[in-house]
Length: 263
Image (cartoon, rainbow, N blue to C red):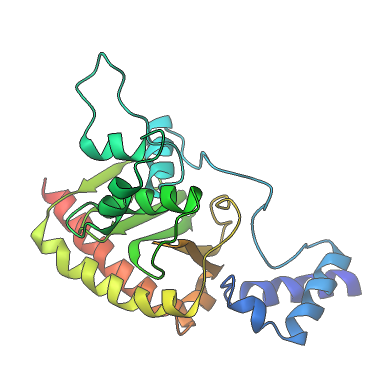
């Protein structure tokens, strides 16, 4: 009975656990949290940190394969295929990204082109890092918010060029490109995400599986890598770094849904 009460108490503590910000939290982890990890392990709850670090993308959180394909493309860490020869000629950016040997000058120009799509620029920076080229740090190109709901996973993505993607928990997809009314919402989201990027660092392992129930994850596509923070919803909403991002992401989502409903 005592073990059951202890287990329930620990479950309540986990729900209110502080958010996890890799590369920042590791340097500020206190004794209380270390003790909690040990206690959770003893009673069979596991560590606070969610996800299996051995897993690797692509993932399939949705019932529809098309939604899963788009979901993984949001993070720009899966291959971007060049159309086959029978298809229309590939776009110039596709030729640069797939160049072999790497077209370093072309990749640098593509990555630094502020008029280009944020997703494409992030892929160019990723290719440059992969071949050992130095890239500028802390250039934010995308923000992705993942929120599990009772019906499934809701995912919202916004990019530096103003593009927005939303995947509903029912696998319904909404894509917005060049929508002037959404641009201020994207800019507001990026404005509160920039301080988060400045205080954290890139994740050095493969992208984790989607967040577990009751947790929210914020992912940032940055020139020097993928940054992220995650934690229980209530804790993230109260967090000084995550709270403003969640608020602005919510405002963007409301604006995007309002546009989608009118179509």
